[in-house]
Image 1 (cartoon, rainbow, N blue to C red):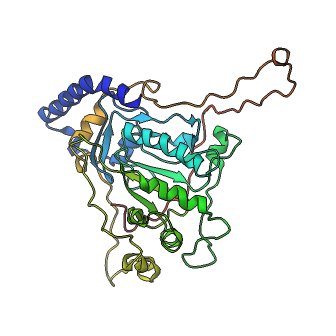
Image 2 (image 1 turned 90 degrees about the vertical axis):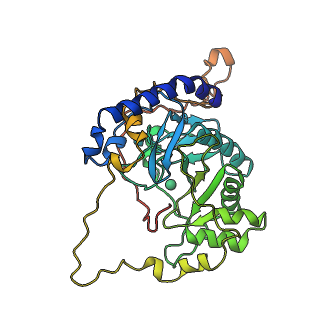
Length: 358
Ligand SMILES: [Zn+2]
């Protein structure tokens, strides 16, 4: 259904986007003179552009046209931290997450998956938390399965992350928390042909290297990186026919259970960056709109799609309460409040991203 809806917008959307791009060129590209951080511009837009779905640029330097949102609640998923408004992605990503959530249940992963950040409505750099997730092809999945009892919107703001590491040791998986089901869901994510990489903490990668008895050829896609001990990160290939999407260099052949993994267990990746004596501190410079692909200015300026028309996928419908007189059953099912109200913003631990996920 996702693809059909996207197709309806494709023709009109492409024309609108092309017109916007050319008009911004004619007007001298005023945006490039602006040094407003791009994260400010993209981080405050509430709705996607009403245009054909298109990832533009690179995972860590780009934006997204025609995004769709995954429903806050599906039969086998719940989206977390709803106040962040990062449920937006390329339709191919939303479709994949739906499929993955069903597969996860079959693998014994509770009632489904808890979905963390995907992207902002028009992608782009975020005000907090990530260097990638900019083109709608990255998604974070919690290492906590969805509980049987649906989480309220407030609980989804408040539920703390659970690390898979034993923090009393150096880079070691907590064997009380890590289960075979954890390994299975990560490896299932890596198994989809449309998935390019899955990022996990180096300790988790090592655990998989030491214990995975399934298809070892898939291990190469599972990449060690800082953080990612409370969630794992699924990155998709550029979907076919998206010429504006910049692909990442393919992962090296082999399972990655080699020197490249052993490096993470040395001091080097964890040493504080050295400063030469007398060196001035470098002021961080944030990317501006002119640092992003040109089409991103047009994406930002494009008319918005309505939030409802841009939400795709199978939404979860809470069981109806049957009046006792009709059912004759005194034990009325509890309806779970899954509605999103005005929710307080929540600051979450930000994974250290050095080196970045590029
Ligand atoms: Zn991520």
